[in-house]
Amino acid sequence: INTCVVGRDNRHTSASLQEALMDGLQASGTHVVDIGLVATPLVYWHAVKLGKVGGAMVTASHLGPQHNGFKLCIGNRTIYGDALQSLYAIIRRDAFFHGRGTRKAEIGAYGKYTRDIAERIPMARSLRVAVDAGNGTAGLFIPRLLQLWVHEIIPLYLEPDGDFPNHPANPQDEANLQDLAQMVRETGADIGLAFDGDSDRVGVVDENGNMLVADRVLALLARDILKRHPGAAVVADVLSSQVLFDVVEAAGGKPIMAPSGHSLVKDVMRQHSALLGGEMSGHIFLAENYYGYDDAFFAAGRILQLLSASHQPLSTLDDELPRLYSTPEYRPHCPDEDKERVIAGVAQALSDKGEVVDVDGVRIKFARGWGLLRASNTEPVLSLRFEGETEADALSYRDIFAEALRAYPQVEPIV
Image 1 (cartoon, rainbow, N blue to C red):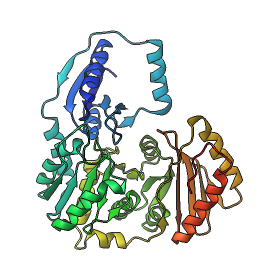
Image 2: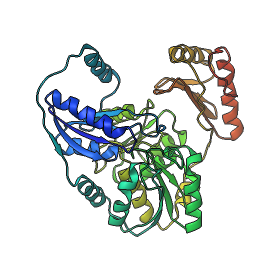
Image 3: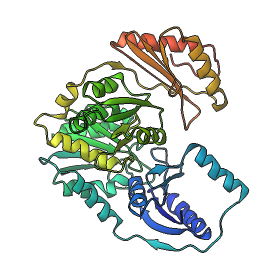
Image 4: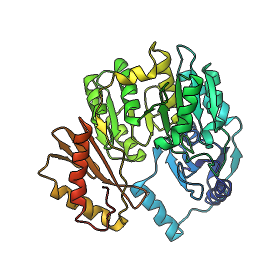
């Protein structure tokens, strides 16, 4: 590639990192398109619109203000895994191209993007929408989008602030949704939406202020899409509830389980030409009338469209879905160098307890539910989740895994 779109979030270190990145790209002969302070979906959108050029976003997503990093893509394909390691090897060898690239600032990036999103998602009626931007980048875009859709916005923490003073910008941690839930209840909003720091993940609360976890949001979107595209593939990560996979199958779709990680889910979607994908962290990928990457604004629009077309409140739509009991995600500390050995050992120890699914770590299907153990992609922790027909079922599966993990004293106990 010879062109790269570069944007940044509102962290205190992002502007200087973006400047250094653009200088380096130009020194390698790359033509840089500077789109400034934006949300991650805008980098993806421009990388697709400009003809599958490179994209780089300076962000640390939902992490604390002391962190920062880069999200890289070519068109709508994320650079990760082996490709990222190859890039690291080039850096270590100092094996760069040399040239004299150009730089131009893209004027009007916000308007072109928001109009494209709004025109793709017609609404049946106006809604009252409470929005918590978490002091991240969503506050720059979501008011304009809701205005174009003629929805009323009830704002919360829209002002970008790199200190994230009100709560971490992580919409899948229910503790971070308490202010939004209270606002929804106090104002009579139809729905509450929360965004992470760089706006590629969305969280949802219903009109009563109750959180809809990501796999239930995916189930509602899947039912809607499968009405128009029977037989379509829907991809979800291994942390997702069995309810989602069962709903997809009952609606005539093809449920596919993927490893956890937004880049991995996106790749599995591409392999199966899936129209919808997602993971429990709140990344939602839509390829029906869109580009298949994780865009929290487009996903939010599709959720609002579904609600606007219904005469029922969101809580009623959610109640139409089956319910199982799911535990929160457990994240015990485990040194990175021990993760693989621990998971292999637990898989061996529990292999006679039920059907083993090894898409990502080990997910064991018991008679009345399942348990999952996998390695975090980003931290020195393990990730565990359990689900059963009753709370007692789920906790009994947790205890089975907990007992197996006691053989590894380097792993923090989960009970």
